[in-house]
Length: 320
Ligand code: UDP
Ligand code: MG
Image (cartoon, rainbow, N blue to C red; front, side, top):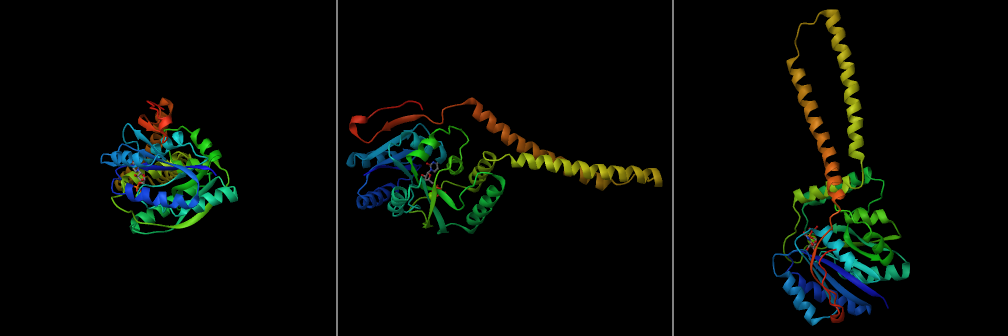
């Protein structure tokens, strides 16, 4: 029998927690495995933390971390990895979009197949808009082209990680986190299991397009310097074209004494070049910003309260 940690990042999920807890408890009953449910409260502004505490009073297998504020799901998961005690960790969303019925399949792949990363791959996404589906499709294809690390397509964070993969992941302390990419980076034996992603049980998604765009930029810039290389290549192409154009203009003037004209073409070129320069500066800025954050080496998060599930192990941690 193994000990499994079910890690759940929670941000304003009061309507989902009871149902989620019931479903997990029922599923785990059938697996006969020992487990802890580790809720990471990521600075929820609703009653999520109170509900977690209520649930914990009835079930000692529940552990929780209450973070000092909202840090975002990526950091909430990192906090969970630091406190997970299981031989394997399963990451699950709190909104029941990731069906707990897959947990036993993941456990059996890990135990019998010897896989270190059993990830759930979406074959459909119910209740998600066409825009979200298509932008996510484009993002994965771009990311795949840009990075040398193979990143699993159409996969969320819903997965089981073995102790090996979990320990490796814990060593990656970067501030700008893109967990899915980091999991690909550490490698190990991977196995996909397919599932239909469910609509949210209750409440609203915490993502909007601006946040998603942010995550997409994060994903690409933390795994590849391709955009910088593109800038260089693009710069060369523009310079060579400009030089050829320059020769043409000079020759034309010398041979035909071209009177001054060409204000529109001049303006177009200046504006075009100005635009390109701003974009490239922006790209450089993205990387510079990341260097700025990483060099500070700030702790990823601060913990308000940690409860380890078993009363004897109760302890408080102030910083990690
Ligand atoms: N989440 C979090 N911190 C945040 C935003 C989200 O811990 O700042 C949690 C949220 O409670 C949920 C999971 O991350 O368990 C996924 O969030 P959501 O359902 O909003 O994302 P989506 O499924 O739409 O990608
Ligand atoms: Mg969700």
